[in-house]
Length: 120
Image 1 (cartoon, helix red, strand yellow):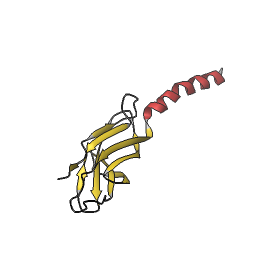
Image 2 (spheres, rainbow, N blue to C red):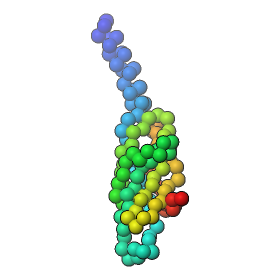
Image 3 (cartoon, helix red, strand yellow):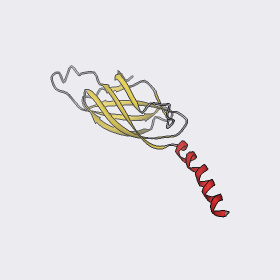
Image 4 (tube, rainbow, N blue to C red):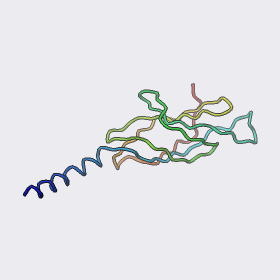
């Protein structure tokens, strides 16, 4: 009897664990405007995943003009809001619109950022 109770409780707990979220890999694609100072040469930038709520930089990848890269985020069932910021070697800085990431299956894991806008 105790054995079956343990099995039943485990079966109920497992779906709850998957709904809690955790590490998730996302793909982000987009473009950074070409620099006049670097015409003909493609410079590198650091693409940062930034919490929209706190401004904390959570992850970074090196990118070039056109990019498609993966990043790991910690996500839960409730959407978390992020901004992508590209800091380039020539001093320019660009940012994306705010995006929402959630572990729920209804939310995308692929984000097309388009052309990043110049940061203020």
